[in-house]
Image (cartoon, rainbow, N blue to C red; front, side, top):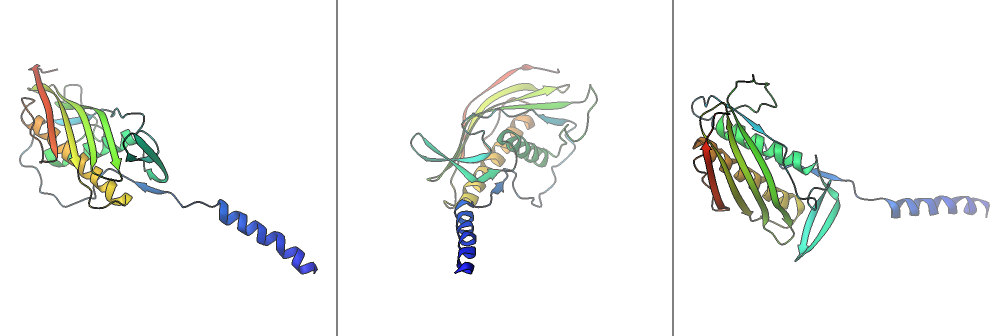
Length: 217
């Protein structure tokens, strides 16, 4: 009987450990996988600066916040962003802009005071990862020329990207694509010198753009 009494506590501890264990966290990024892309034609003669992204508090959480219905959101504690959501969006936009325009981000190369730069500021109105789909990225953004001829441009772009499935990796992939389309839309505004911006695809709806006066500072 003595061996049985010794084994029982060990069995109980094993059961408690199994009940208390949780699934390991999985981490996701908004940067799209690296792909071989055609280099941008010509030398644009400027750099970009992507300022910190403003994100709604309800979405700016370490875990993915899944919209489960009208007005309801569920935190997915085992599904997390690899960095704060604002940093994820900033990196995704920087990656898309540098690829599309063939430029450098001043975070990588420190410019001189007189260097020509397009400064990009973004304010996220809505960031939805939904179990019913689609992904929604609603952003008010501003592109402003510094030491380069052009106009400051203020626009609101709403990207609605259908997901190819309801599992979390596919839902995140939809938001990756939405961020990439937003970057391409902003890039078009910079290419046009701040006069206008063109939606990067049918998933992008422009809720108006306003071009301000010419600026060299």
